[in-house]
Amino acid sequence: MNRNLPFIAAPLLATVYGLVRLVDGIGGRGPGFFWTAGHAAFLAALVLFVPALLEMRRRAGRGGFATVTAVVGIVGIGFAMAQIGIDIIVGVLATDDAHMQRMFHDVQSVPGVGLAVYEAGPPLFYLGLLAAMIHLAVVRVVPVWAPVVLTLGVVVSMVDLDLLPLAGLLMTAALVPLVRPVRVPAHA
Image (cartoon, rainbow, N blue to C red):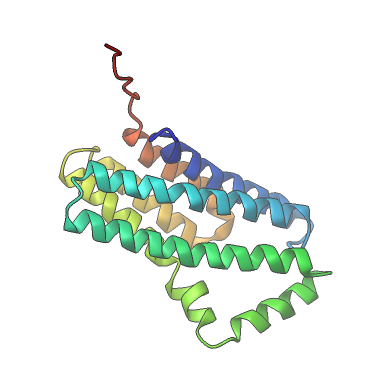
């Protein structure tokens, strides 16, 4: 995989999720095509954020701090993927919104699931991503404004889920400085 692709594709897929979520909300969010398609786009975004974090670690010098931030971010991605996976399965199995809400209640009432998968776990992704970006700014791999814009994107996503398209675009803008021309080695 091209090392630059995740820096653009991951946040753009998060933007797609936000846009599909808005479309889904027009008739009331619930099980169906838009629910599944939007969540699938976000799941793909999360998958692509893993190589993005690993590449950020590499560009920061692979030291202890860079490794910890990548690990924290990837652990958060794991929890977020569990949440999105549950959302997709519930959306596919539910017959209507009321059934979907009952299924979510059943899943979230399992001890530890609500806390780990819905509350404490996924924010680790954003924490790791922000720490990695700040580290890259400190070591002058990205401009100082990049972590500021990334922080804005994360905050916007937490203010209101209807702002996810804007959050995704801000994250895209923040990650653009990490896109570099791919160097092709000369053949002898």
